[in-house]
Length: 538
Image (cartoon, rainbow, N blue to C red):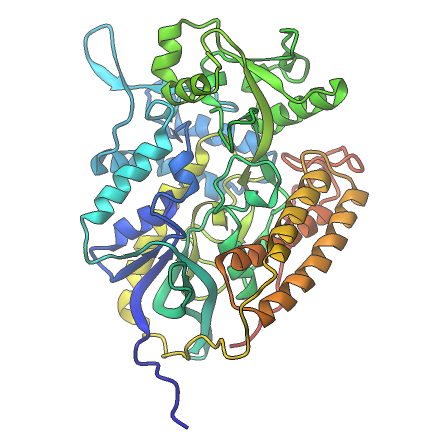
């Protein structure tokens, strides 16, 4: 019998999985030095970056300082930030912004009294100064579109859209376990093929689709975190799920975020009768860090039996509102809300995954050759609570750091060994896809109910019991039926949900984004919650 044909294995220097800010930055900084392949689950714009409204935090004004940005980040992180990661990110922030401007990103400017024009900086929760550079209220769209345009100018980069990574390929190379690429499903053909690479960069974003209500697009299913876990990488601090305080509450809107910058520009949170409530919870009121604002809204909604609260900026001039928040103004107007007159109904929603795959300051994971960048990673920057607009900054800073580290190693890393084709000989087409949709819905509902803004030991145990049962059911399904995009995402989502629950069970205190009624106090010592997988040898 002839051996399987492995001669058609695709081989690259670097495989970048993900097309958000982290993936695009890494690919652009590598493309002149290495043969790069970029995978996107949908169009290149199918990433959380594309929907980001607020902006990028960096010290760009002479009245601000790197020390102040560092201190603000450490305070927001509730004692769990790694100081070296915060220093590294903040220090490299201004250079990251200059690089974006050099790529052509058109940030918002304003005219000064002397007739000169400067970049407009706004302020968001937790920041002591105006340091958020932005493109109106569509910063992510502008950055994403610009970087995609730059990538298209490099035809040598192999861009593959509508592709979803199934699992990482791990080999023994020179006596060490090393990533060697990934098996990838083409959504159009349904075929799974191996893509080999000397280095793999996971830039797949976070896992907020584990929750019923989220600001994230449908692609945010924790794929990179789950793949890295299965490949033997440590995961940390997954219990710190940031719930954005202000997601638009309207039956005609799905996952529409009301940027924190609106509160930075004077928006006030109110109850249905018009009463402000944030001053009762924190001296910083609407500009308190997101965990405090989200818990305050959650408390008021439960106390009064409300479906939502309201964010009101109608006291500002209409021209000011339209100029600063044109996307939000247009969206709300399309739903019959004129925000220059009407308060905006809002609720908290899962927004950002502060934990992830453990990395160092160059993006290295526990597996040789594998990097994790952006929301997929746990660098130590965010600690127990991400400060507003530090997330995009992390993507640009660590995308540069990882690319420079990869370039320095290119000549010394051997090519991966050819691999067998994906084996589908023992599986059949499923006629029970309802199982996938049912399990997906069940996970998101019990995560919202039991592992949400306020937690207890009993709720966490209930969630763990359910997710472990579902994971077994999903694995049985995965073993017997042909792999589909929905099944891949469900499998990953179930793993990530369990990682969130297990990390939450390890933390016997309330800190930052993790609040539990059983342990309402904050412990004297801040310790990461680290999970270590059993390593499966290739």
